[in-house]
Image (cartoon, rainbow, N blue to C red; front, side, top):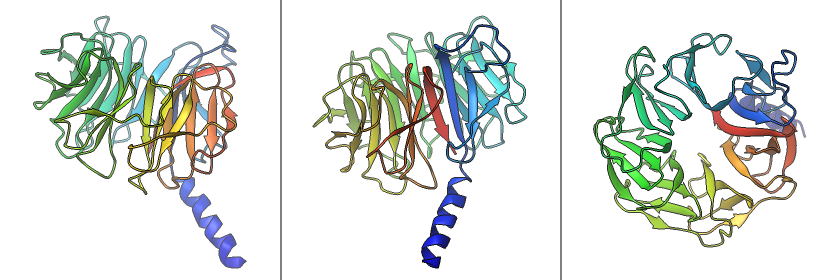
Length: 323
Protein backbone atom coordinates (compact mmCIF):
# COMPACT_ATOMS: atom_id res chain seq x y z
CA UNK A 1 0.00 0.00 0.00
CA UNK A 2 2.82 2.39 0.87
CA UNK A 3 4.44 1.72 -2.47
CA UNK A 4 1.20 2.55 -4.28
CA UNK A 5 0.80 5.79 -2.37
CA UNK A 6 4.42 6.75 -3.05
CA UNK A 7 4.01 5.96 -6.75
CA UNK A 8 0.86 8.07 -6.96
CA UNK A 9 2.66 10.92 -5.23
CA UNK A 10 5.55 10.79 -7.69
CA UNK A 11 3.12 10.77 -10.62
CA UNK A 12 1.30 13.82 -9.22
CA UNK A 13 4.59 15.63 -8.68
CA UNK A 14 5.61 14.91 -12.28
CA UNK A 15 2.26 16.18 -13.59
CA UNK A 16 2.70 19.44 -11.69
CA UNK A 17 5.99 20.10 -13.45
CA UNK A 18 4.15 20.61 -16.73
CA UNK A 19 2.99 24.02 -17.86
CA UNK A 20 -0.10 24.28 -20.04
CA UNK A 21 -1.08 27.44 -21.90
CA UNK A 22 -4.74 27.94 -22.78
CA UNK A 23 -5.71 30.60 -25.31
CA UNK A 24 -9.30 31.82 -25.03
CA UNK A 25 -10.66 33.75 -27.96
CA UNK A 26 -14.13 34.61 -26.78
CA UNK A 27 -16.80 33.79 -24.21
CA UNK A 28 -20.54 34.24 -23.95
CA UNK A 29 -19.94 35.30 -20.36
CA UNK A 30 -17.41 37.97 -21.28
CA UNK A 31 -18.46 41.54 -20.55
CA UNK A 32 -16.68 44.05 -22.72
CA UNK A 33 -14.36 46.20 -20.64
CA UNK A 34 -15.10 44.46 -17.34
CA UNK A 35 -11.77 44.50 -15.51
CA UNK A 36 -12.94 41.99 -12.92
CA UNK A 37 -13.88 39.40 -15.52
CA UNK A 38 -10.79 38.24 -17.49
CA UNK A 39 -12.57 35.48 -19.38
CA UNK A 40 -10.54 35.88 -22.56
CA UNK A 41 -6.82 35.90 -23.27
CA UNK A 42 -4.10 33.62 -21.91
CA UNK A 43 -4.47 31.27 -18.95
CA UNK A 44 -1.70 29.11 -17.46
CA UNK A 45 -1.71 26.05 -15.19
CA UNK A 46 1.19 24.22 -13.55
CA UNK A 47 -0.95 21.76 -11.59
CA UNK A 48 -2.65 19.82 -14.39
CA UNK A 49 -5.67 22.10 -14.55
CA UNK A 50 -6.52 22.26 -10.84
CA UNK A 51 -6.04 26.03 -11.01
CA UNK A 52 -5.64 28.47 -13.88
CA UNK A 53 -4.01 31.89 -13.76
CA UNK A 54 -4.85 34.69 -16.15
CA UNK A 55 -1.70 36.24 -17.62
CA UNK A 56 -1.04 39.75 -18.82
CA UNK A 57 -3.76 41.80 -20.35
CA UNK A 58 -7.26 41.86 -18.92
CA UNK A 59 -10.54 42.48 -20.66
CA UNK A 60 -10.99 42.07 -24.37
CA UNK A 61 -7.73 41.18 -26.12
CA UNK A 62 -8.46 37.77 -27.62
CA UNK A 63 -5.84 35.18 -28.48
CA UNK A 64 -5.86 32.21 -30.84
CA UNK A 65 -2.69 30.41 -29.75
CA UNK A 66 0.30 30.82 -27.43
CA UNK A 67 3.69 29.14 -27.46
CA UNK A 68 6.84 29.50 -25.34
CA UNK A 69 10.37 29.90 -26.63
CA UNK A 70 13.31 28.02 -25.16
CA UNK A 71 14.52 31.30 -23.63
CA UNK A 72 11.33 31.68 -21.59
CA UNK A 73 9.64 34.22 -23.84
CA UNK A 74 5.95 33.82 -24.60
CA UNK A 75 4.41 34.55 -27.98
CA UNK A 76 0.69 34.91 -28.66
CA UNK A 77 -1.09 34.95 -32.00
CA UNK A 78 -4.00 37.38 -31.73
CA UNK A 79 -6.55 39.05 -33.93
CA UNK A 80 -4.53 42.25 -33.87
CA UNK A 81 -1.15 40.63 -34.60
CA UNK A 82 1.60 38.92 -32.61
CA UNK A 83 2.26 39.71 -28.95
CA UNK A 84 5.43 38.84 -27.01
CA UNK A 85 6.24 38.67 -23.31
CA UNK A 86 9.67 38.43 -21.68
CA UNK A 87 8.41 38.20 -18.08
CA UNK A 88 6.34 35.00 -18.13
CA UNK A 89 3.22 36.70 -19.36
CA UNK A 90 2.92 39.47 -16.79
CA UNK A 91 3.31 42.16 -19.46
CA UNK A 92 3.11 42.10 -23.24
CA UNK A 93 3.95 44.19 -26.25
CA UNK A 94 2.59 44.03 -29.79
CA UNK A 95 5.47 43.18 -32.12
CA UNK A 96 3.62 43.65 -35.40
CA UNK A 97 2.24 46.66 -37.24
CA UNK A 98 -1.01 47.25 -39.06
CA UNK A 99 0.19 45.07 -41.96
CA UNK A 100 -0.11 41.87 -39.87
CA UNK A 101 -3.49 40.98 -38.36
CA UNK A 102 -5.53 37.81 -37.82
CA UNK A 103 -2.52 35.82 -36.63
CA UNK A 104 -3.84 32.28 -36.08
CA UNK A 105 -0.72 30.39 -34.97
CA UNK A 106 2.77 31.31 -33.86
CA UNK A 107 5.63 28.79 -34.05
CA UNK A 108 9.07 29.31 -32.47
CA UNK A 109 12.33 27.76 -33.65
CA UNK A 110 13.59 25.50 -30.86
CA UNK A 111 17.29 26.43 -30.88
CA UNK A 112 16.83 30.03 -32.03
CA UNK A 113 13.91 31.47 -30.03
CA UNK A 114 14.31 34.86 -31.70
CA UNK A 115 13.10 33.19 -34.93
CA UNK A 116 9.33 32.86 -35.17
CA UNK A 117 6.74 32.25 -37.88
CA UNK A 118 3.20 33.61 -37.80
CA UNK A 119 0.46 31.81 -39.72
CA UNK A 120 -2.16 34.39 -40.64
CA UNK A 121 -5.20 34.93 -42.81
CA UNK A 122 -2.84 36.75 -45.17
CA UNK A 123 -0.04 34.20 -45.30
CA UNK A 124 3.22 33.57 -43.45
CA UNK A 125 5.31 36.22 -41.72
CA UNK A 126 8.75 35.64 -40.22
CA UNK A 127 10.91 37.40 -37.66
CA UNK A 128 14.56 36.64 -36.96
CA UNK A 129 15.07 39.20 -34.21
CA UNK A 130 12.47 38.52 -31.58
CA UNK A 131 9.69 40.43 -33.31
CA UNK A 132 11.55 43.68 -33.88
CA UNK A 133 10.89 43.32 -37.61
CA UNK A 134 8.74 40.97 -39.69
CA UNK A 135 8.99 39.87 -43.31
CA UNK A 136 6.21 38.49 -45.48
CA UNK A 137 7.13 35.01 -46.79
CA UNK A 138 4.41 34.02 -49.27
CA UNK A 139 6.27 33.23 -52.49
CA UNK A 140 4.72 30.11 -54.03
CA UNK A 141 1.34 30.11 -52.29
CA UNK A 142 -1.67 30.01 -54.59
CA UNK A 143 -3.91 31.11 -51.72
CA UNK A 144 -2.14 32.88 -48.87
CA UNK A 145 -4.56 31.96 -46.05
CA UNK A 146 -2.42 29.85 -43.69
CA UNK A 147 -3.88 28.38 -40.50
CA UNK A 148 -0.92 26.43 -39.14
CA UNK A 149 2.84 25.91 -39.50
CA UNK A 150 5.19 23.12 -38.45
CA UNK A 151 8.93 23.63 -38.06
CA UNK A 152 10.73 20.33 -38.66
CA UNK A 153 12.43 19.72 -35.32
CA UNK A 154 15.53 18.18 -36.93
CA UNK A 155 15.79 20.56 -39.90
CA UNK A 156 14.49 23.99 -38.80
CA UNK A 157 14.76 25.52 -42.29
CA UNK A 158 12.22 22.92 -43.40
CA UNK A 159 8.66 24.09 -42.81
CA UNK A 160 5.17 22.81 -43.55
CA UNK A 161 2.16 25.10 -43.86
CA UNK A 162 -1.54 24.29 -43.72
CA UNK A 163 -3.27 26.40 -46.36
CA UNK A 164 -6.65 26.77 -48.02
CA UNK A 165 -5.51 24.67 -50.98
CA UNK A 166 -3.26 22.01 -49.50
CA UNK A 167 -0.01 21.42 -47.65
CA UNK A 168 2.99 23.53 -48.63
CA UNK A 169 6.68 22.89 -47.98
CA UNK A 170 9.56 25.32 -47.64
CA UNK A 171 13.13 24.07 -47.49
CA UNK A 172 14.73 27.48 -47.06
CA UNK A 173 13.15 28.93 -43.94
CA UNK A 174 10.06 30.28 -45.66
CA UNK A 175 11.71 32.13 -48.55
CA UNK A 176 9.85 29.95 -51.07
CA UNK A 177 6.98 27.45 -50.85
CA UNK A 178 5.86 24.49 -52.96
CA UNK A 179 2.60 22.60 -52.65
CA UNK A 180 3.37 18.98 -51.81
CA UNK A 181 0.01 17.38 -51.10
CA UNK A 182 -3.74 17.44 -50.43
CA UNK A 183 -4.15 19.68 -53.47
CA UNK A 184 -7.13 22.00 -53.48
CA UNK A 185 -8.33 21.03 -50.00
CA UNK A 186 -8.63 23.30 -46.99
CA UNK A 187 -6.07 22.16 -44.42
CA UNK A 188 -6.77 23.36 -40.89
CA UNK A 189 -3.91 21.89 -38.87
CA UNK A 190 -0.64 20.05 -39.34
CA UNK A 191 1.57 18.19 -36.86
CA UNK A 192 4.87 16.34 -36.77
CA UNK A 193 4.91 13.25 -34.59
CA UNK A 194 6.98 13.93 -31.45
CA UNK A 195 8.80 10.59 -31.68
CA UNK A 196 8.80 9.50 -35.33
CA UNK A 197 10.55 12.27 -37.25
CA UNK A 198 9.21 11.45 -40.74
CA UNK A 199 5.60 11.04 -39.64
CA UNK A 200 3.27 13.99 -40.25
CA UNK A 201 -0.50 14.41 -39.95
CA UNK A 202 -2.80 17.01 -41.46
CA UNK A 203 -6.40 17.75 -40.51
CA UNK A 204 -8.71 19.15 -43.18
CA UNK A 205 -12.06 20.81 -43.72
CA UNK A 206 -14.53 18.06 -44.72
CA UNK A 207 -11.84 15.61 -45.92
CA UNK A 208 -10.64 14.12 -42.64
CA UNK A 209 -7.07 13.19 -41.71
CA UNK A 210 -4.13 12.78 -44.07
CA UNK A 211 -0.84 11.14 -43.15
CA UNK A 212 2.66 11.33 -44.56
CA UNK A 213 5.06 8.60 -43.51
CA UNK A 214 7.94 9.75 -45.71
CA UNK A 215 8.68 13.19 -44.34
CA UNK A 216 5.99 15.02 -46.31
CA UNK A 217 6.75 13.66 -49.80
CA UNK A 218 3.37 11.95 -50.15
CA UNK A 219 0.05 12.33 -48.33
CA UNK A 220 -2.80 9.82 -48.04
CA UNK A 221 -6.20 9.92 -46.38
CA UNK A 222 -6.52 7.74 -43.27
CA UNK A 223 -10.14 8.02 -42.19
CA UNK A 224 -11.25 4.54 -41.17
CA UNK A 225 -13.81 5.03 -38.40
CA UNK A 226 -13.67 8.82 -38.62
CA UNK A 227 -17.27 9.91 -39.25
CA UNK A 228 -16.80 13.64 -38.66
CA UNK A 229 -14.36 14.81 -41.31
CA UNK A 230 -13.62 18.40 -40.31
CA UNK A 231 -10.53 18.16 -38.10
CA UNK A 232 -9.30 21.18 -36.16
CA UNK A 233 -6.49 19.76 -34.03
CA UNK A 234 -4.13 16.81 -33.58
CA UNK A 235 -2.37 15.60 -30.42
CA UNK A 236 0.14 12.77 -30.04
CA UNK A 237 1.03 10.60 -27.06
CA UNK A 238 4.80 10.98 -26.60
CA UNK A 239 5.06 7.78 -24.56
CA UNK A 240 3.25 5.59 -27.09
CA UNK A 241 3.83 6.42 -30.78
CA UNK A 242 0.69 4.54 -31.83
CA UNK A 243 -1.75 6.68 -29.84
CA UNK A 244 -3.11 9.87 -31.38
CA UNK A 245 -6.11 12.13 -30.84
CA UNK A 246 -7.97 14.52 -33.12
CA UNK A 247 -10.58 17.15 -32.37
CA UNK A 248 -13.43 17.48 -34.83
CA UNK A 249 -16.38 19.70 -35.70
CA UNK A 250 -19.47 18.00 -34.30
CA UNK A 251 -17.85 14.70 -33.40
CA UNK A 252 -15.78 15.64 -30.40
CA UNK A 253 -12.55 13.70 -29.87
CA UNK A 254 -11.43 10.65 -31.81
CA UNK A 255 -8.58 8.37 -30.76
CA UNK A 256 -6.31 6.09 -32.78
CA UNK A 257 -4.35 3.26 -31.17
CA UNK A 258 -2.63 2.11 -34.34
CA UNK A 259 -0.72 5.14 -35.51
CA UNK A 260 -3.63 6.79 -37.31
CA UNK A 261 -4.77 3.82 -39.39
CA UNK A 262 -8.19 3.71 -37.69
CA UNK A 263 -10.17 5.95 -35.36
CA UNK A 264 -12.89 5.62 -32.72
CA UNK A 265 -14.82 8.34 -30.84
CA UNK A 266 -13.99 9.23 -27.25
CA UNK A 267 -16.80 11.54 -26.12
CA UNK A 268 -18.25 10.24 -22.84
CA UNK A 269 -18.86 13.31 -20.67
CA UNK A 270 -17.89 15.73 -23.44
CA UNK A 271 -20.98 17.92 -23.61
CA UNK A 272 -19.68 20.11 -26.44
CA UNK A 273 -18.57 18.26 -29.57
CA UNK A 274 -16.86 21.10 -31.44
CA UNK A 275 -13.27 20.56 -30.32
CA UNK A 276 -10.80 23.15 -31.52
CA UNK A 277 -7.73 22.33 -29.40
CA UNK A 278 -6.14 19.30 -27.74
CA UNK A 279 -3.08 18.69 -25.61
CA UNK A 280 -1.62 15.61 -23.91
CA UNK A 281 0.16 16.20 -20.62
CA UNK A 282 3.88 15.60 -21.33
CA UNK A 283 4.64 13.86 -18.03
CA UNK A 284 1.46 11.78 -17.88
CA UNK A 285 -0.04 10.79 -21.21
CA UNK A 286 -3.27 9.55 -19.61
CA UNK A 287 -4.18 13.17 -18.95
CA UNK A 288 -5.40 15.34 -21.81
CA UNK A 289 -7.38 18.50 -22.28
CA UNK A 290 -9.88 19.42 -25.00
CA UNK A 291 -10.84 23.00 -25.76
CA UNK A 292 -14.25 23.52 -27.30
CA UNK A 293 -16.00 26.37 -29.09
CA UNK A 294 -18.51 27.92 -26.68
CA UNK A 295 -18.31 24.99 -24.25
CA UNK A 296 -15.08 25.71 -22.40
CA UNK A 297 -12.32 23.30 -21.41
CA UNK A 298 -12.65 19.59 -20.64
CA UNK A 299 -10.20 17.19 -19.01
CA UNK A 300 -9.70 13.43 -19.24
CA UNK A 301 -7.52 11.45 -16.84
CA UNK A 302 -7.87 8.10 -18.60
CA UNK A 303 -6.76 8.66 -22.18
CA UNK A 304 -10.05 10.11 -23.39
CA UNK A 305 -12.32 7.36 -22.09
CA UNK A 306 -14.14 9.83 -19.83
CA UNK A 307 -14.29 13.62 -19.82
CA UNK A 308 -15.33 16.21 -17.25
CA UNK A 309 -15.72 19.96 -17.46
CA UNK A 310 -12.61 21.78 -16.21
CA UNK A 311 -13.00 25.55 -16.66
CA UNK A 312 -13.99 28.50 -18.89
CA UNK A 313 -17.72 27.97 -19.05
CA UNK A 314 -19.20 29.01 -22.44
CA UNK A 315 -15.78 30.02 -23.77
CA UNK A 316 -14.06 29.43 -27.09
CA UNK A 317 -10.84 27.67 -26.12
CA UNK A 318 -8.99 28.14 -29.36
CA UNK A 319 -5.50 26.95 -28.45
CA UNK A 320 -3.70 24.61 -26.03
CA UNK A 321 0.06 24.10 -25.74
CA UNK A 322 2.17 22.31 -23.14
CA UNK A 323 5.81 22.01 -22.16
